[in-house]
Picture (cartoon, helix red, strand yellow):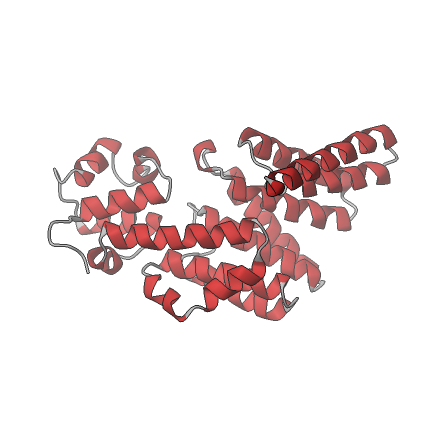
Length: 281
């Protein structure tokens, strides 16, 4: 339950910070940044419409905000940080064990928490069981908590889910659906402010590039790959960097650019060697 001494503004600030959003990003087209600052500092009480819009952008409901306090939010975030670590390191069996723990649903306070839960559950169905239908079902359920087709402010998690749905549809050979979701995820990512781009989005570039390669759209695929590599390097991240260099080398070979392909494959091997050496430390 929410502590008596915690206001709407304090809870909103805690959620905003955990979403890695600035006041400017949250306030855009809702109220001025100065007004949001006063709300968060308990200097101004917003009207119901402003409250609703703020909550909608954060992916929560008014009822959820009024029932939460910052300690609960922080505990939930720590749990999902552990889950995300398993996901990033492709430890899918450990990830599934964590998701199957009966206690986990006690920490799913927000719609966005439920969304992440089903995203990871769908990923386990995909990578462990190769059960594409179950994976798609979980991903769709996760997306349904916060996403609408005409939504303008798409979150990073929604973009990740859209991308993974595109990948699953591609494996099911439902190519029109695959293209729709992969392009939607890519376009939504391009619309994000630079400060909201995260290393997790590198995989969005990879998923789209693989699909384009399979459709023999090689030049377009190369462009997407270069953008993904630039994001990874800009964030000093190895997440999906080796996969991007590998597919780049494959495409360059298909285009008969052997020297460039050789260089890309060398970079792929270098990233693999660095990651293996880090694991051994």
